[in-house]
Every structure is written in C-alpha cells, then in structure tokens.
Length: 127
Image 1: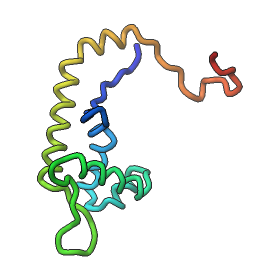
Image 2: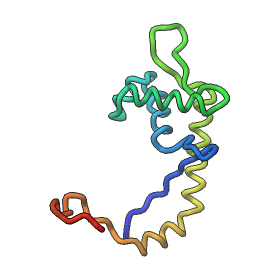
Image 3: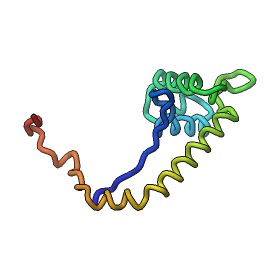
Image 4: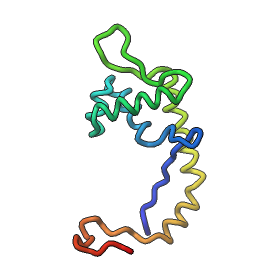
C-alpha cells in the first residue's frame, strides 16, 4: 500500500495564497524571530524567504510578518500572522479527518513508488 499524504493549498483569484511551504516559513519565523534564520533553517536563500514574506504580506489585509519593534533587526508574526497560521492548521486538520477514509481506499489502490536510487540511470525517457 502506498503512503499517501493530503496537502492543503489555498488559492485566491486563481493564484496560490497559502500552502505548506509558506506556512512552514511563518512557523520558522515565529520560532527564530528572524527571516534570515528561518530561511537557513529551511535550507532556502534569504532572497527566496523575503519574496515569500512579501507575497504573504501582500495577500492579506494586514501584514503577517513585521519588523521586530525597537530596531535591531529581526521579525515577528503579527496577530494576523498567528491567526492565519492557526486557521490554516485547523483547515488542514479538518481536511485530513474528512478525507481519511477515501485516502485510505486510494492508498490501497496505488502502487508504491520505487526508491529514486532504484531507478536505472540510463533508462530511456517515456514517449
């Protein structure tokens, strides 16, 4: 049986608004108090993290991430940022609960994917 996992992505006006990566970045900023430290913890560039934060802040009425008050650098989640995180995790939990029976049935029908290192290196590309 395949190990299937449900993921939640929320789009607004046919554009991605929230997904696992952006939510994980918000969590990492909340944990580290810094966009730079969050980016390092996630193995992404600071520029990529900054662009994602700009997209997050631009996608909501009020910013989700703000500069730490008092100067000296750093970043904090705003109240809205913490609430968006909470709501996303609630949506994720409810979706997983609702989809669990169908996901289990689908997993029983799916083929386990071979490990990447088991694939032949010189295999011809599919047509």
